[in-house]
Length: 264
Image 1 (cartoon, rainbow, N blue to C red):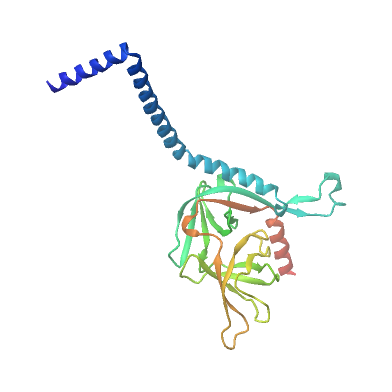
Image 2: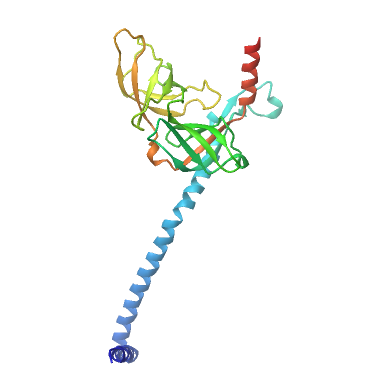
């Protein structure tokens, strides 16, 4: 009986709407509201799930833009390269990648990327994010790569204080993923809280001028000739997503020259 009642009610409403203009307009107005609400919800749903592809596309586009930055090129002698009609030779190549695993709470933290040898990645490539440096590729398979995070006690990176060009070493000694240590800065140099630190460009891995962090604490231990400096890292390693893998196109040449100099 209940279902029969519902069926009769539906037919009654349809009959009223069909033969009454006012009720028809109200009914269609309500239908449009429901339909519009449904389509808006549907579109929002799919827009949310398409964000991953959008982010991926943006990362690829940013990698292409980074390849065109002046910092990605090495200025050369125009007389030597005049026939090529260029003053620049590309020094670094940038490739986007996605972080698929990451640790921040051990003494030796590593990051896994979703690209590997088949996508052009190799050992000893730098990994950076839009905010700053991340680590160095230490192992690759065909489609994946392992990165030694700068949050690793084995990591040592040459860095420079921006305001006075002083060279130091970035090291992580455990504890918070937000902070690291800046070592080898002599006490006769002026260093204050808030000074910014960038990569020095002295290694064959990281390009010069990549953001590292900001000095948050400075102290001198009795009898020491070097500061004890704490650095607030630019990158939040607990929320890493897209990164860029940086290939030094001149690394092999630099390494051969270095080895040749050692053997002489």
